[in-house]
Image (cartoon, one colour):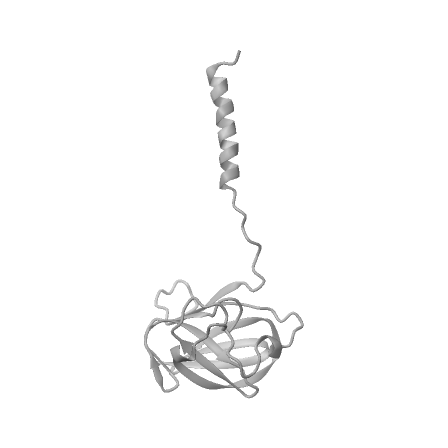
Length: 181
C-alpha cells in the first residue's frame, strides 16, 4: 500500500507534466523580413530622441528592386506592415511642418526621383489600404546609385546643419530624405 505522501508526489508530478503541456507555446519561426528600428540619435543611452522609424527589412534574394518596389506605385518602405515613423518634435518636411506624433511612412519609387510620403494611417499592412487623402506631406527626392550593394533593405539617420537625413538603401539604390528643424 502506498503512503499518502507517495500518492501526493505522484499527483504532483502528473499535475506539473499536465501544466507544462498546457502552457507550452508554439513560437513562430524567424520572420523572413525581420523588423528593425532606426533612430536618431541611435545611442540608446541618449533619451532625447528626435526621430524613430520601425520597419521590416526584406532581402533582394537575386530579385530586381524594380519587382519588389515598382516605379510609380506606392510602396510600404520595407516589408509587412507600413513603417511607423515617430517624430518627437515638429519637423519640416519640404515646405510642410509635420507635428510631433506617430505616422506611417511610404515611398513611391521612380527612375530618377522618389516621392516620400508621411500619412496618418497606422497599423496598416503593406500599401494595400493606402489612402492618399490621409497624407500629411509629400516630398520628391533624387535617387543616387552606390557601388556597395545592400542585400537587405536598410534605413539609417545622420545629422545635418538644418536637421536630419533619413537614408534609404537597397541594392545599389540610395535615397536621402531630409527632415529639418
